[in-house]
Length: 152
Image (tube, rainbow, N blue to C red; front, side, top):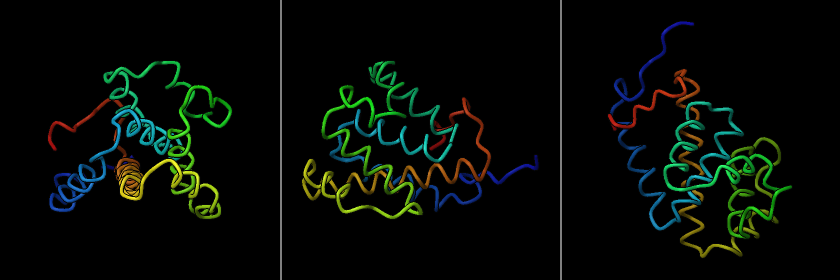
């Protein structure tokens, strides 16, 4: 494989702007929910780098192995996740997989029923940012297990 651009070093203004957007998106959201959303989007996007980062972060924050294993099959494992978490995971899937039919009204309504308007906007921003991070990591061939967030 050819060497890929180091996005953080080559586009530092864009990288820092994305870090700011990411931080703003997380504001006011439950940290456990943040990790669930980031893990699910990373699974769907097949981003091994981000999946490693966010499962590691979730474990450090006290998330159970059992729940981590169930995220990929959350619609069949609803007893592991609250209604609010299920609504967030459903919205994450719809936004991440836009080409498969957009965001259905029922999925959006379910999320809107669990989150206030501001919190829903924050959740959407979080979903947007993890999808962007996934695309950066995949495009630049980031290697799982080489978390460079310390340079942020």
